[in-house]
Length: 281
Image (cartoon, rainbow, N blue to C red; front, top):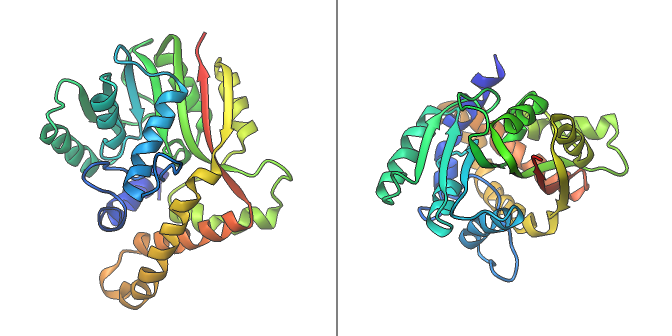
């Protein structure tokens, strides 16, 4: 199976889980939440991550933003509603495009937000089309991060910024082979080819031509999302095991098991959650 097909199968199979257990009408998010003094509940934390990432690259109403791997357009709509910028969101998953376009219409954001079906490793946009390249937990789905960084550099204007929120591998000490194997049920179950260390992300951005690169470990702020995920997994995984042969696609069951392994791997301190920013000079 080609990796693109695996991504499509994953999101098509797990849509009902995200809708029932994670994504709300106000956020339309398929990413983790950012918890702090301003956000102590799940819904607020999902929206708070948008605010934190937007602040990290100083997005203004004058900016044109590309949301790469936008899901249902939750972040794109938040940016338009709260900052006033224009946003194009792109995703590989056709049902996400259709639902995202419907949500944009329902929130009267046509003309400010557009959701398109497109591969962010090879977009159709002209050179220097955007001020900000935005990616939350999406670049990890690609097999070639360098290709993504090169494309981001191409379509960003001079002085454009890139803002990434992503799962990253523990830097020190480097993971052993057995520890990398331990992560595979999670990465495979969530259609993620591999995780990179913060240094590998930094080196990739440098190679593409970016400068002023900053990597911030925000793992403590997303841990409550893991606790929520753990409770949901405890409640749903045993049921899923029993009824899987009759009602569940394999990808949906692997998603549950991958969540368990992700939670366990964080306890073993095998991965971190990073916000990465950089600039095109």
